[in-house]
Figure: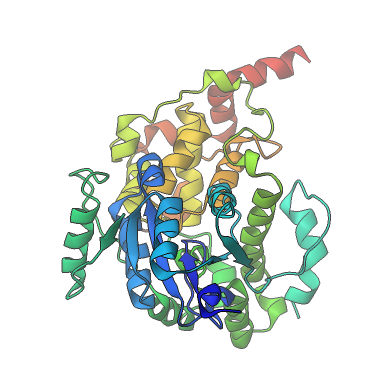
Length: 141
Length: 269
């Protein structure tokens, strides 16, 4: 396996801003990037308060911050670094999933799940308290 | 692609850099900076100070011992298990069940979001208010957006949102209910507005909670009266009847006023 093949970009997004999130483990030398997506900014119109909170967190983590089209930025950063892989934290956000799908056309994309708060549980729960009754035992010990 | 190279000398200089970098998306009026500091250090400092026992007793009160950890949990800065562990280090788990249950609410909303991402902006169920969804406005009234409704307590809670990016959970419910049921505005409008300002704005927790208030993800609409606000917030917020006339009524009176079609349906049945 060549050195080039091992190079990767860690896509940092707003659902996983913890330095010891598994996405950062064993990849301390990888290029990291957070991108404020222009289309999302226009649609969500985040206030200064939100932008500042996220920015302060990223500065503390020493993560470079960019603006642009997320997918295009990641592809450009990967090309610049000679990376073939994007490493990213798992997210329920469909926009994140859509970007990952787009990236997979040209790059290897690895999604890393966070440590679970609760074990996976089958089935749907239309109301919270039925769910709570199923899961509370280990949480209350 | 633009790289952001902020001036981090002081918090003020950072704010100025952010305002410049995002000048095209921030309005001139948007100048408030949250008292919450971003980052893991601030999160852990706050985590050390939690009082989960007092939280269970007083969390519904405006000045109750709420943790204010939500911005950090929302962004994954704090793992919910770390928060639970800190709780059980301070008191036996059985004594802080409500504290642990509230952490689980977020997990439940995230799980629902993953199973049904399409529910985020769609009505999950019809409104149980007697009104059809098209009878709700699709516009955010300017007096609500600016916190100048003339209903003193609601304006106070909206100013909390606008100035700090944080609201006590109970006051989120009041404002959401006021917008949807007293002003008859679609819950999606309010959800979008909250996500713009709340530094803990999480699409799943936020939107499903709005649906719960609206009754599109609950058996009945959530509404409140001035007596309830005075009980939980009266020591800190103007709850005088003369400055909150719209809310000063019994639940029966409010139900008849807010949901007249529902009442008519009951009478027919």
